Image (cartoon, rainbow, N blue to C red; front, side):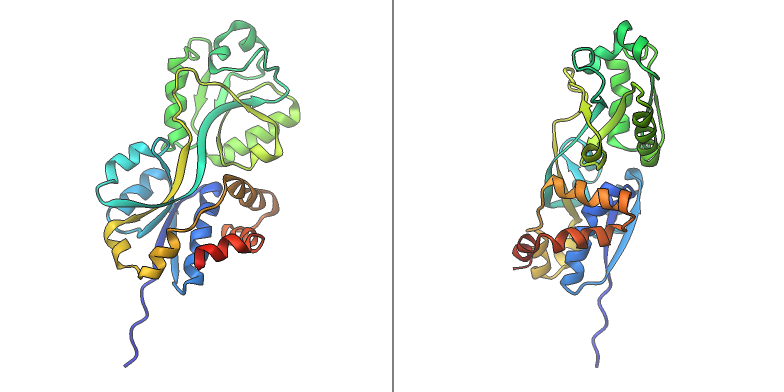
Length: 271
């Protein structure tokens, strides 16, 4: 009798391109190990509960301990960290490099009258409401007294940030944008992070592959061993993210292209 075909591994990811490519590397590794893969994606508040309930077996990537710490606190008893895929994930606010550093180098500088008078806009275009960057951006507006100086933070999405940065840099505007690393904009524009002396943003995180505990135990031992060896530099995420956003590649194709150029690293994972 033919044995039943095993169910696909369900891999979750956040529906933003830099998260999509990070997860696509895991997807390609699973495919090379012979697994079928079902990818599900959505916003942060949707994905973490699905992971906790076992609807997602694997999830990439979780920013720990700070960026996604609020969500992790709610699911950590049912979820385990498999491996850091890369290190150095972080949030910040940034200004274009043509804004003089002697005038604007810190978040606190944004409240100074001579700075607000020079800015083209005091509206900061943000991303989705459930993102860690959004929660901390709303906090810093109050903590640094920026609301009293006329600054506002606008909820949006990833595309709103990308469009705003491209449009305003093309116009030579003075503006502030929430940003993060990894993100391809860091490679194509000079964007200077602003110092955060109050520590509103967390220290740089590790971006990890995580798993539902029960689902992890059901995976073959070789699969668990290989997944635990996946590791790549943060620059790889920027490179893959850039090909998605500027060259029109889908995340899995972008991941395969990067992996083809780094065969020794991939071979070490699969050894």
